[in-house]
Image (cartoon, rainbow, N blue to C red; front, side, top):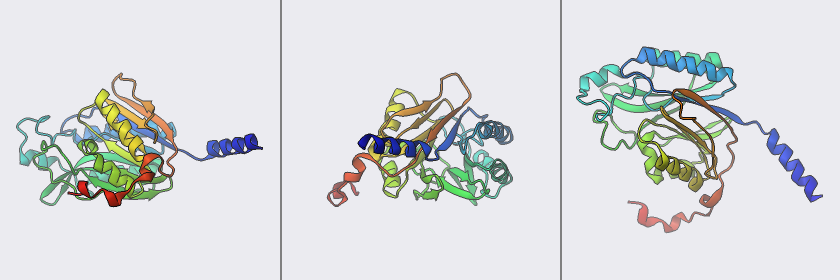
Length: 270
């Protein structure tokens, strides 16, 4: 009887619809928004043709992440503001239309202009072309001199579970992922541009494990999809520009996070 029950559970689990996710692990051109949008569209179409339902770019993909003064020495405010794109700008409207056409969730990193301020932002459009996530980077390591930092960690409900987003340096502070997890995120999206390698892989695996969530890390030279147990289930092959795919099953949080005692954690709340 026990074996039969376990078999039924296994069959049911296997039958649960998963989320087919694709990371565009590609290096864009600095300053060339039109060329980068064309590249994004090309890879998005390829990913959708291969069954992807959520397609993600790295950080700052639209303009080539030029707002970092270490990457772009001599960067001026005028140069950076000129490359900014507003939420209702023509290129983002094209991305919204592409999401609608392909009937997928499309995530793009871009330098966002809001009036007289700039932000390092990430947006996901739904299959209906509507904004699902709009997140602006909160921690930038003091190397993005013209960006205003964000102030909120949104978590959104989708047919594929609850999602939250961080951008690059945000991932280095454990509080950021923990906040998203406490707010119910089952999948944390991390578009990035900065450091990668063995230490980053360990960090991303830890963020997944300590919060009992899925993590999708998408970088021009690295892409990782990590399960709530900290296991890397898919990664890039290290051979240049490429799409990376995984089918994941966001579910209720697991692991030690369920044993938290926040009433005893006052010492870290300052």
